[in-house]
Length: 339
Image 1 (cartoon, rainbow, N blue to C red):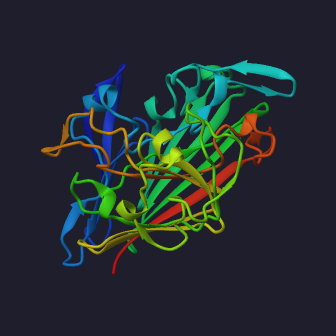
Image 2 (image 1 turned 30 degrees about the vertical axis):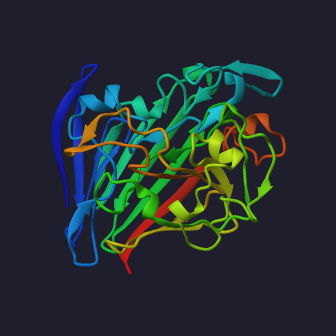
């Protein structure tokens, strides 16, 4: 079942909150602004339903206080060095919204767009057209993102895009998870990422281009590990990440697992993308309160399935290019269970 409620207007557009409810009483709510997921209720080991994502009740907070809470980011997720890249011997200059770099699509990326929405059974289908040279990116891009909530308590996110001229693309969802259903720090969560290598970062948080082995580092999550036990604040890369994780991991296989030992909730993520950026919410804390609790560092974490950041400027990274006649297509499935 899908319901819809108008909650605000923005630049003359009505803003709707859509809520999908499955046969288990689990709810997923999302806005037509930025495809933002504002709520996802999940049962704990006793069947108690709580919201396990960070999201505001007041829409206006997304315009002023949101570090991409719950949004679809694009055209290009992550940072692009020097806010520029070359494509077929032509250089494209982008908005510098992160120092000298471009972040998550620029000043007005997909997270700040009002999308057209259609409802299909248990699915919300979001559509958007991004004009040629919007935020500096070449090509008119036609994008479709769908959210499906199944009766198996799965959220299926599908991405599709086509272009009328050669361009670059890297899309992801930027939901912050906290499986306790509160805003208490997530450092008690246990994480498993099947990755032998990760991408170390420069001081600007741009990948250096190296693929570094995780062996004997705080980045080894090949076996499930409690975040507080993995975090080594003396590690140079942890310091660069803002005393925490903000790093891409190159996946051996597309199955990531996040567990919380008190509620016994478990989130298993299946993806066809080559990497996941694990951001541990290190910089949270300036956003005030949410649901009656103060937002603090590590109040939520992100697991952003995607291609490699800054790939257009790193020839050794897998290609992020999209040409006319091709379709950018990706799917990530988030499954909630208890254990």
